Image 1: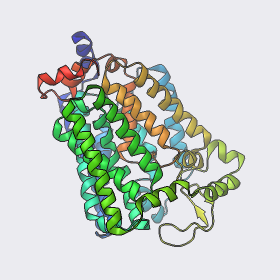
Image 2: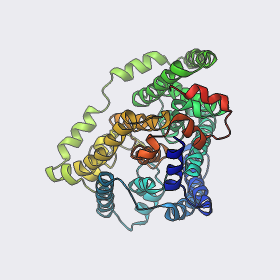
Image 3: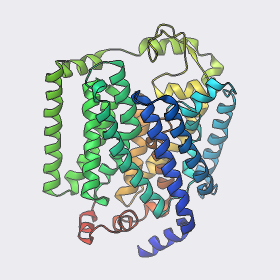
Image 4: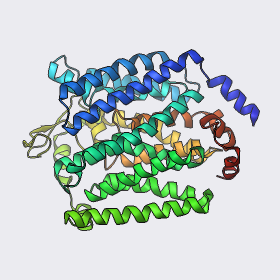
Amino acid sequence: MEAILKTYRQKEIIENSDVKFINLFFLGIIVYSFGAGLSDTGYIHPIICSLIQIVGILMFVPGSFFLINFNINQLYLKVVYYVYLVYLISVVFRGFSLDFGFLKVTLFDQWFGVFIYFSPLIMLIPITEEYLRRLLQAIKLFAALFLFFVLITIPYIMVSGSHEGMRAVEYYSRTFGITSGIILITFPFHSRRTNFLSLGSMFTALMISVYHGRRGLAIYCFLILVIASIVYLKKGSFRSILVVVGMMIFSSLLTLGLDRISNSGLLANLTKRGLEDTRSNVEANFYEDMQPIDWIIGRGMSGEYYCPGIIWGDGEPSVYRSVIETDFLQMILKGGFVSLGLLMLILIPAAILGIFKSRNLFTLSCGIWILLGVINMYPSSVNTFTLNYMLIWVCVRICFSKSLRNLNNHQIMKILNPKKPKETFNQLTNV
């Protein structure tokens, strides 16, 4: 096995001089996301937030430029991926405009701007030891930022069912909080402090999503926590199991306490939202407006559909909408079944390889993470310029790497967390 690890390092590791570009790339993503997060609070002037995002762009664009390597060893992935990449460029050109208002939105809208079409480029960054460690550090920082944003927007979040509260819950959970779930699923590779931070982030996301009746988000968080709990129950110590159970009890009591304080009827709200059909009218308008050619190639990056009477955002009823909350339909709106099909031809094989062809917990978890992302594309928006979606593409690269899948857990530990005590390795033997 040491020979396999040595071969992996020889194939994948980059020069130490490139570490600065890894740092620049991730720092740029963090700064850009932080600026977008501040903008969503409404506390900071939009111009200041936009300037922060511009600084982030000026960091992650050159950082990624010097890191990207267009060499892909797997023939299947190379063909499908490059076809998909070229097609995404065509989607951008079919909807691009030099109008100032369009450029402003497309540069600074983290969820539906132009950068989501370039997110797959992150798969071209070689998977190196330093790159993986910086990625995990970014995930930890995002978890801390999530708790920070929840704290400063608590006046909105405490108002159950409010538009501001629901937007804050969805945006901050999906942009900053949920990514920490992969740390929970791979808990043996991380420190106790890191695991507690990730656990706190995920339980907070689950509580506030239930509090606001955000069904898709709640299911996403619940699935992540269930999978993480299975890993804990399989190989975690008894003390770790007690921590999980204790956190579940604490979160339940805290959630019920918030419900009683606000008299909002949390469980009734979630039940009502669970039974309420909030999308049939929107989807019916979408189906009716889409023409046969639109289903095939979509309407481009700026594509819209006729959907009158939907009140969202500025409080004015819509006539045409550029967003539909179901991610599968959103991808069809912009790029048609061609875009969706090519994406699935990449994600599903990667998930299968990660789940069924892995010899270690880390690559197995990457396959699971891809599968969770695909499942969550029905009720929610996953295809966004967030670390969560970027992580899916990193997982694709990892799952297609046979050398990484063949490493055992001890070798993965040496890559991800070489400073962790050796006695921890004993927990990894049969994970």
